[in-house]
Image (cartoon, rainbow, N blue to C red; front, side, top):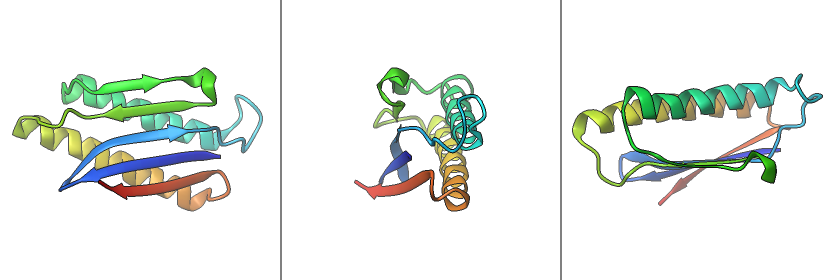
Length: 112
């Protein structure tokens, strides 16, 4: 099962962590894993390339699937707006995947 955890501070998403594998199909045919992966990779790329935010990324695919992304605590107004827009869109997309594939994805929101 994939576990997706979003950490929220005051009026912002501070970080997210995704662990595990969906195991909803054979390797290369797992549409749930593909959906989560595409959403996550697009978000990280957007944060780095579009918003130009120096996010901290830890990725260990060999260790059972692990991705953690942390935003810097302080950003300029424009970078903050871009970053939060991308992160909120990602969170909404993952929440929808978790709702539609509850046997394979668990979504958790933590208030820090």
